[in-house]
Length: 468
Image 1 (cartoon, rainbow, N blue to C red):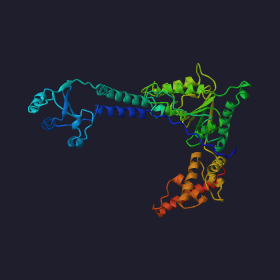
Image 2 (cartoon, helix red, strand yellow):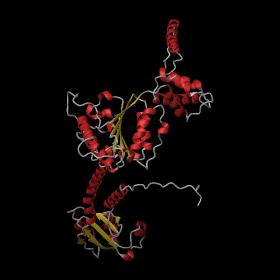
Image 3 (spheres, rainbow, N blue to C red):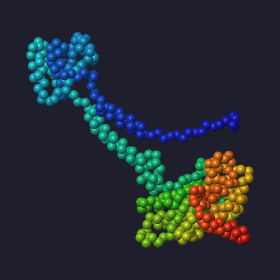
Image 4 (tube, one colour):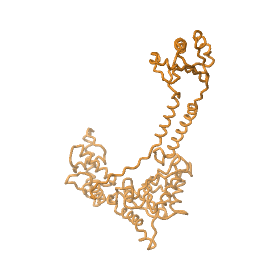
């Protein structure tokens, strides 16, 4: 068998929607409710036609009064071939005609008067007929509709209606964490992380803890329970966590700190318990909490309500991380750009054993980051990542990625086939100063002041040895 033969991808089995069955049953019951159950489709007849034509000509075989409100008329078989009956297309089996009357309408008296001059008088017979099906349906149909509406509401609030489980009423205490395991492909690895050599080395060591625990436990070492990534926005904390998810080869739970807290009391603590319960079932594993300052703020600073929902969530998190009954094999990885607001109990060893500081990249780090982000961009041959790094002091990794994207957009706007150095220069100016104001008028005095100001930057950068 050829190895190049393409395998047809397996299509996921779609869950059958039972609402189609409910709808079909409802339509069927409604149709039965409005359907008139009778032996034959009798033709409606006016009372005057019965008296003046059918009885006068002797065509009537019998008359039956049903429940005192319905008159059924049978026509003699030898008279059915008359033109008037052929024109009405009456059925061969009776009753051929029917009409409704009201109770106490003296129908018999009128019938006797109409047959005063007729030799063979027709005497009506009476019968009681009970059609149970419409009666039963009149009770079952509203009940069925109520049950259907109730089932629909229950499926929606319990997560069976196609919505996320964390947003449902009955599943509101469940964890919202996304699970990345061997069946989930993560396209980010440590090779995609540049300019964070020290931080990457620390995180790679944690990954090695999970892959080769005996290497450390044989010497008496203990795997750290928590690692806190601290750094300014855009420095690559979340990117480093994604790379860890792609390299760890163990279950990786990812959740934001704001996903724990809701308006209902006790929801945050319940979600923390559920998250750690799932993690222990899949241990060894990693739990990544992004923006942990959303739930990890220092307690006792809320003067209006000291024991609010946020503090309950934090208390439960502290217990799960290092308390009685905690299990091994679960490493907590968290990220924040506000370490000063975190609770001291959260930062102590035993919970977050390591704090990895992620600063903005230096010149070499910016050059490495540019090289990573320039790979998917069609650049010209004269492109120099080192020159770009020189022009972007103080830029974080996210800002460098934005510069590369803006340069590609500018080159596309100008109709170029490759992104040139000038496009990157314009992109840097746009990221630093915003949109170019081509129509803004500047007086000669303002131009003179701006020239002196910018010249001062250039002179300081030229004479200061360690200027970046």
